[in-house]
Length: 607
Image (cartoon, rainbow, N blue to C red):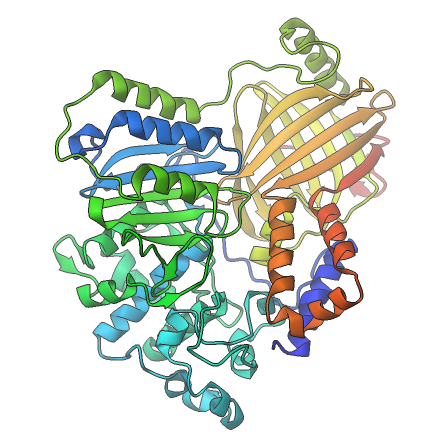
């Protein structure tokens, strides 16, 4: 089981969060890694030729129906889609507010790229699937640990069958993840069954570093990314400088499609063998059964569907690359789904339309009307509705004149006003992102407003930093924000509402463009605009958090650790309620004495 130190570190972090602590609350040293945000509008760097669906044997009508169903499904929450057959893009879609061709977090999809690095070292005769971990790391593993870990091979790490108890949550326990992996106990005998654990992927990355003397992302820049013309990406590293391997990768959808196409073509790209066909064949086999409800098996750091031989790179919240071998097809999706694992609406809908025995046609005549309808569906997905409306209250949904008057009054009353918040433990960045990137908030203390020709600026002071959020009433506006040296592109879309008491509410829907996360900010103005109530919520939200807690609490490791003690004392439900409150906090505030000064803290002037 995980060590007491690891269990305590995870629980202490959770308690710090739920108790409202801010700032440097992590046991892991923080270094900013995402030091630049994507440009907007994104630069065009399209590689694949664009064609009509019919030209590659796919019906435009079928593709339009697929996109429409993804759009309507609230759990799917799609961001990007790109579809290829025979190495040509026959459809692509980016949903508002996510600009086409922008880098996106890939989460565990990164594992399938880590597998390629291992395959390259095996091709170079520097490694084999049977190589034992103890052979690679030698004296870095103590004698006692070597006795315990002696049976763990590269194959076991690739297939998630190492049995190691040290898992993703343990990465919050300190800076030296590799030593913690070595010190960990086993949940089960190595090789006897499957247990998904991202630290196996991290150790694969560490093996690449041990053999090549460089971080895995640097090794792959020479062997994979440069040959595939992949330039705009980021792969985070741990505090010891090891590429995370199992997560932490940002990449453009079209570049992910290049990886999928490389797998589909047997490791061949632009006349060069990037990785051997033998490795691709082994990696995409069903190497171990998973006992999952979706029937998927596991290959080398990817999911295999034994029913049709297709396979999938999958990251949580539905960052996917589907490879349908029988149809020579690659489909890439980025989403902000409220579903954590491989069983999801995105995978179900995609397989229903293009897997499960679907066969492309050898020839289809061009269908101008169907293709035009497809383009309209894509355009609809990429645009916000054009009318601004009052959404609730007694004014009626379609009373645009009255709604405009209320919006004008709101802007007039809050322009150049500042509010001091009474609870300063919440942040603009969603909690999900804070945990994933180890970048925890220093607390929001003030909010002010400035009208603008195109909408409104919502200025949020967090710690010593001021976030200037440009929000549009009729379309998304984009701002680059700094979180402790890390840069993110934020979209913001504003609308006006009212509650049952007649209090006017400003709703600002923000999306972190490179991430799978959104933050919804509702600001209710009370007592003739002298006080505010701020409701924050995030998506993915409570459902994902509770699913993660249930997964952890039901795991074999948890039944032997701190979580078992929580369950024994009947405190698990209290823990869940605290987590839910943290995901959807309510903050109250009052108007400042003046716009430009609160006590000794001078506020900001927007450039």
